[in-house]
Length: 426
Image (tube, rainbow, N blue to C red; front, side):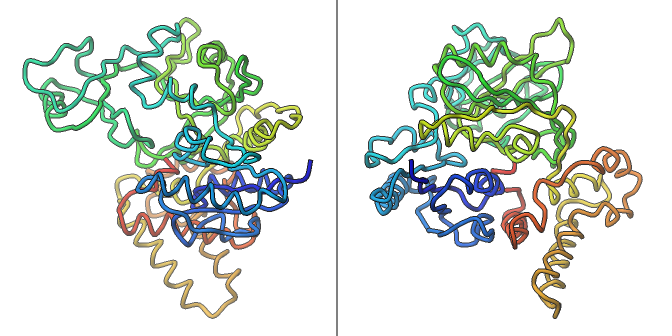
């Protein structure tokens, strides 16, 4: 088979960079697409071309049509593979029929996705799948007084059926706080019983009947704390989660990558409980790949119908950090996020005024962003976290793909403009 044209979506994200690194060796042509101009993938040396497309969230129909049109440009040269990187996976899976013959969408079947996404569908599916999970109530908000008929009561977790990255997820500790959420939220919401233990991200490759690659990691550090982005991750043994993952595949007929969030105490007499499933690649995909399983490559080859290599085994204890997010989490209470990112912004301004070569300026900024020594002013709060992260690998390094360090400016600019992290790093 001739090498395929591979189109990677959401090129702005660090996730897309990892996908590009995995797929460059098998691609005849690699194209990054996004609705914005400056992208992480675009700054790398991996792409042969970059294209602007409509935003899939704001204009889903136009987005699908733009990708269908783009793929037709190359169909005469051989197979075309579209790799959805983020939230567009479900959208493209639902519209496979809009693409020409020979165009492959690297996403799970729409029939499988529909059983777990949005989150309220997963809650209904789990009632018959015999997979350990917290009791979950589903309702439409806002609610009027007298409409409450819940199995759960505070403390509990409330979350919207739609969304990712922890957006809208809140722990409700009192009846008064719950009443406020019930009357002020809109749309389908879930009330989920609290589950003891820690959060685990479990990832797998499946063929519709069985899991043939499996790994897991946990967040040692998050920013913001408790419900933010994974800043420091560690690979852990996935064996405790294997029965539930296998059951999910059997019940849903899942093919491709599968990512599930669990809560678990670590005790042998407590079965890990499934919290939710993301029918797409996950924010920690770089960690998962560097830890030992190249999920993007396996997914691409499976989608193309090509023979699969041995999936490999995850390196237990492997640690990685996302530099900008990890450093922000080190600062404790003495340096809030606004001050921290103001300092990073000033470092960027100094870099732009420097008369040294571009590569040297980028490397200097990158060193400032990844050097624990820059945070000595908050040494008391940072020591323990710094010890955890000092041997962790940096997810993206300045020399990894040419000038790809510039891609972090997407994260910086998003923080400076909106005061929050981009969704894909959460």
